[in-house]
Length: 284
Image (tube, helix red, strand yellow):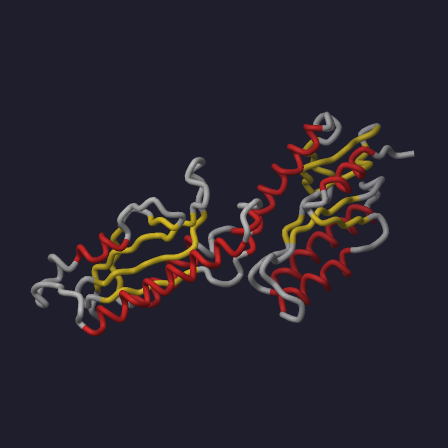
């Protein structure tokens, strides 16, 4: 198959130029040999963007992306109609390559672009989708990575209340079975209170239910072996972009119901007050 030398750039949303903070919100792919511009933008499921920039009105983001989408479609039509002069049509590289450079040229706007990058591909459309999934969808982010971030957040919260020494990373175990938890309070060498952040926002509904069931089973086995002598708190984070009625939301709700039980407490990961109330309690 023919391989195409392409250029691409990541679309970045940067509403506060003073801090330089940005979020990846799209990808542009330029195919010089075909003089074709492909792009994919984050127009839906943008919850994590507005959560990251909490003070920002979501309409600012929506308008910025709508304006960019309209402009890119305009350029796309001009290229298809041959209105844009691209010099010698037989040249794979040449003056027309400057079209892409002009599109991504740095400007003092809230939508910016990364530096130009190169990639070889046999299927530009599939490559665009793969780049988008990586840089915007962050498909490399596993549940383990997400839970590490959640654990860091819980640790900061506990440290702020001088609870860091009470809750340490421990492996609750006997000679046969053991489970590691990031936050365990011990009394007389017994685990009396446990906090374990749980990410239940996987892309697949089955993965959500399996991960929740996995941790429910761990707790049940530890209790059966009389290794847990107090409650376990799961601060949970679900699928941010799931709506009522879709498979992931249904799986999340079912998983929460399955997790609840004697000695297990659930709380929204963002509910810091409830997490602290749990951590501050003492075993009577």
